[in-house]
Length: 84
Image (cartoon, rainbow, N blue to C red):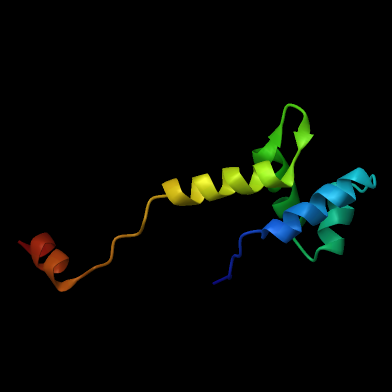
């Protein structure tokens, strides 16, 4: 099982700086020790009409995280309810 970590705000600012320097997604991924697909997904999800802005990207990510469905825990009461 892999351990997935979400990008930090600092990583988002680093991505913006590297984009400004003209780096491509593969180079950005290598420099930040991330998967290329992580960088691609970050830019796709959080790029606005005027480009990529890290503060806006962080707000969007926080909003998605808050709205994400939470896993239900199998408590004794839930198990009894299922078996009934």
